[in-house]
Length: 302
Image (cartoon, rainbow, N blue to C red; front, top):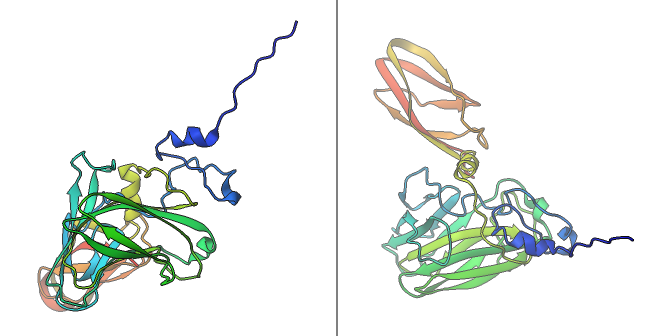
């Protein structure tokens, strides 16, 4: 007598979907159906959950980075843009702890306001592949915006903004080669005073928006530090040094930065600018007696 044991077929896609996007994804386009990305990393965007804000939880700027990797700007006029980290109440239709608020004042007719994200490197790896962008958005009042994908005016999608959270999904192909491509630029309607919330931005390979990928905080911070690092202070004093005296300080970054960074320098006395070559900070003293330099941030953003 023989006994035959059979096992029901497993639907891999169905099983993977139960992970809620924590670790895996099966790509939807034909060439990737056989691939399983069994590791964290399906979201091409870093800090899509707006958890890292190394420049501060509230940033006022006219053209600059706010939440790590995200830039806001405006086209003209004396607009004051305030971008701040918000904490979820637990009643939102998403699961991330934080989201971004963009508010503005002093907006005049014809002034455009933007939020954008830039990817490092040339985008030849992305050419002619299908990607899906998904995100939640709401406003204090009804308004509208346009999402431009991959820097192309032919890939623009109208985004109605209501007073309730709405998830938007945009699928398209990257069709042109660009250095440091901008896969998303959200342009708000000209002349609009903003009070807009944005959450869980995800860009992934394929034609389907899967569940938002949760990245552990340490990994998220590590990725962000390739572009921006800040510290309480890095200081070195000089006392009664003569003219032309040079002071070098070798500093090892926690994470290797994308390129030689710029830095803010706070002087405790008169002194010359600090320059950075690789990991060495250099300043030449001009014979002005006691002197100290303090550095708090290193910026290697795109």
